[in-house]
Image (cartoon, rainbow, N blue to C red; front, side, top):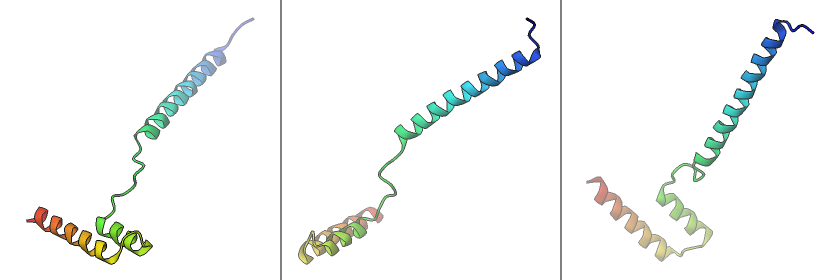
Length: 78
């Protein structure tokens, strides 16, 4: 049986597809393991306000922690 040039072309096509699948799997694995699941950084005052709104902390604790955050913010900005 004689083989024509089509056999060589299909071999190249399958090789390219195989390498594409391998590269795609490696890329997906790297992305999955290096993704930062924490999301964007939130302002501590917003988090404190949410905790106060949910009733996790009372007004006294809210104001005390807010004062500490503001004191820390003025120390780092000067």
